[in-house]
Image (cartoon, rainbow, N blue to C red; front, side, top):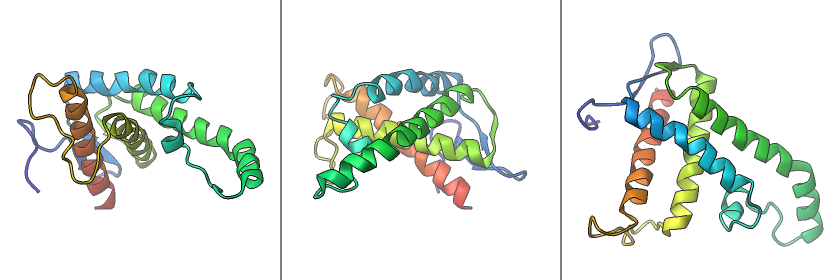
Length: 159
């Protein structure tokens, strides 16, 4: 695997379990800022990305879907919010235990899902801006950064 940016890999498996973080302060502040933004998304039931964060379990059975929503939706929302809270509270940490790293992975994945929906990201990748002046450029940079972090987390936790 090749190093990422001037500091190399930001997330590495720790010898004492969990992962060690080498994330610059500006990136930590960015990560911390994601939680309140995502909480706003989760608390807006009219937001179209809610279908991506909380997909239907029984799309062809409205009665079972209603029951599922009544039983599981609150738990799913709580799980999303807990992962975001962990990301926010441990953004300055130099080490994450396995549970914290799992929460980071879930939170980062949720943000990537939202950004991907908002940017209409496809597997082809032909939606990407071709100019720095494109107003979507910062959002795509955030998406790519989070994708890189997620990849490093997965690799560190799998190793």
